[in-house]
Amino acid sequence: WHHPLFSSGQHGNDPKMRDIYQALYDAAADVVITGHDHNYEQFHRQNADGVADLDGPREFVVGTGGTSLRPFAVIRPNSAVRDSSTHGVLKLTLHPTSYDWEFVPVVGQTFTDGGSRPCIGTAPAPIGGRGFGLGGAPGGDEMTWTTGTAQVAYAVVRIAGGTTTVLPAPGSFLPASA
Image (tube, rainbow, N blue to C red; front, side, top):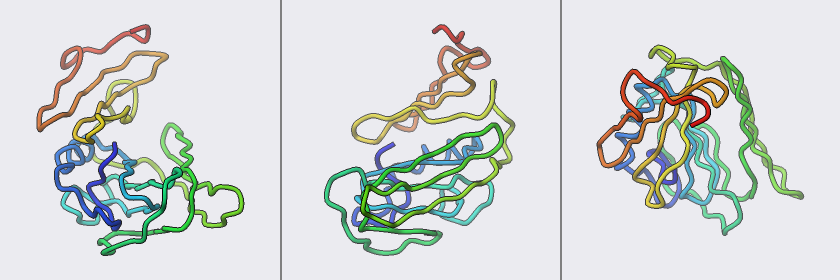
């Protein structure tokens, strides 16, 4: 989604995103990718209260896609890696039980960040495998979450305004052709 719950950038932490982050924590999400602040920042795993937690998601703030970059303001707890001078993209490679990340700078720039981590968390795996976020509303207040794969079947969860809706219904899922 767009607005990060945690950010050391000029906009800082956005507490209105806490409920979505908590829902992802409860679902054992491994990665959260946000933007809004025009820089790159990677956070250690943490819970929605900002406490380091190995069962929490790793948040990436990736606002390095082309507009002017901005310096950091207040460095937040659990901030692991920061850069405010390099344009580029975050490349994620997802595996069944792990993921790799790599910040790829534009030609001529040298900052990089990368690593590999196992998927961890205390919640049971959802139907069809681990979930992933699909996108959000322009205001950053809503996101859609899905489980499973397009090859099998999937369930969709819409999180908006403090309300969580499972589509089509709890305990059911959409066929891959939907």
